[in-house]
Image (cartoon, rainbow, N blue to C red; front, side, top):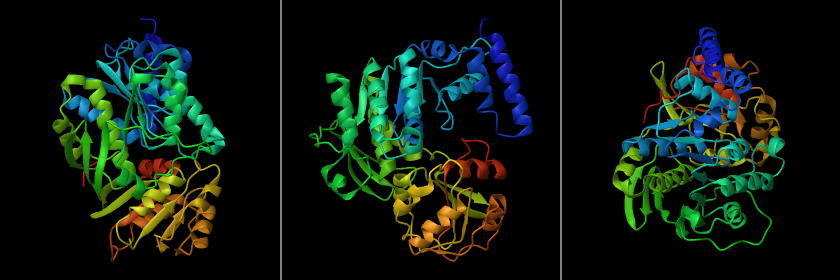
Amino acid sequence: MRYLPALLIGRLIRFAVRLVRPGGGSALPGLVVSKLAPNLVYKTLNSFPQGYVAITGTAGKSTTTKMVVGIVRAHGIEVFTNPSTANIEQGFFSTIVRTGNLFGKVPGSIAILEMDEAHAASVARKVKPTTSVILNVLEDQLDRFVDPALVRETLTEVAKRTTGAVLLNADDQNCLLIAKSAGKGDQIEWFGFSEEDQAAVDLQYAPTYLDSLQRPSSSVTLISQNDRQVNVDVDGEEVSFQLPSRGAHFALDAIAALATAREILGERFDVNLAAKVLDELPPVFSRGEVREIDGEQVEFILVQNPASFQLNLDTIQGKPDQVFVAVGRDVHDPSWLWTVDFKKLEHVTIVSGFNYSDAALALKYNGVEVERIEAYYFTAIDDFLSLPKPSAGIKTVLYSADAMRRLRRYKGFTDPEDVNRV
């Protein structure tokens, strides 16, 4: 009963926001409820019989979480989880408002949560994770984190507070340092790429400026990848499946998900069922999502830091004839755009978003022809999507998180689960 007034207010706020903005109401209710009932999230996380799983790191959290949730649910376990846009504390409050009853009770025997790097540590101080998954440390949001070493320290705190297994990326020296500092011994589990794939792929982990540690052996290992088709070794058993999106970064998410699901499920884990789930799972929205708009296919690709921009550029198929680049307000320091090699694009049809001038300058410096610069974002969206069908490939949108949210809201793509497998 103690949380009923706060949750009732949260629901009313969510209802009001959604009347004004369809698909909205994901942030404000959580913010209000967090002030009225600050312990609600911690009480909820303590209520799951199988505890909660924290999936964190710089990149890949949304996709990995969706994969783990899909596999665990396929094994018959009820899961509480958060949408990919709700990975900070107020987002957890919003998820409880949306999915729970007026007494704060939410369904599920286990919580599997995507967690922002900083907020994961904050929550772990109050409620220890049963299992934690640390995907990587990249040079990202330096205006917020200052130095990747600070992210590593924060994630080390999450690892230390985890009561059960800590799953880490064997190919990232930052993760090896986290394991060394956490002192978890046999509780550490590793996932990673084969030696051949390590040499072929640069996932742009943040440098540590320290002597390299010896790479540990991984229990879940990517054997090979050909476009979206991957072969993975899980404790000596090999499975094959197609990824929901192109790129080695999505292969990393998949092996992390398999390792995590295996840890959660124990003897119940069926590797073939897990592979089947991953073979059928749609991507998280905007992570290589392809939608049909006015009878045409359009690919939406979210880019959030130098590594994700470069990796997504490198895996674009062919030479798309029509490309839209939008860099929004979330890129507080657009100087990092100058670290990206844009030459794969050759030309861009329209550049827009809050940081359109910085994006256009970086593109032109890289020798990319920019056909049009449009300061008014919604005009740019309408004009790009109304272009005649491209002569090669499909319309391709590369955008930052702020530009993504604005486009999806403007076009009415308000349901994050409304994503189909191509």
